Length: 84
Image (cartoon, rainbow, N blue to C red; front, side, top):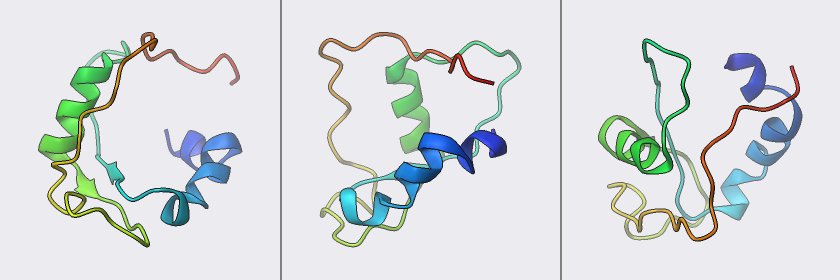
């Protein structure tokens, strides 16, 4: 996970997070299997176990992680990257 976080598209996007986002969070995640979670489970865990990330212009709900749930319109399951 650390390699993913510090390289490629994720690294590029994270450098812009403070200016792009008014709400963001991070969580240390451990699980016994390699199956990726559903979006709603990922959101639940981010709120229950995560912490707010630094952003320049936080919304009023940012610090408490009480912002709106992700919209799942036309979304699919979370899929692993095909690049290794």
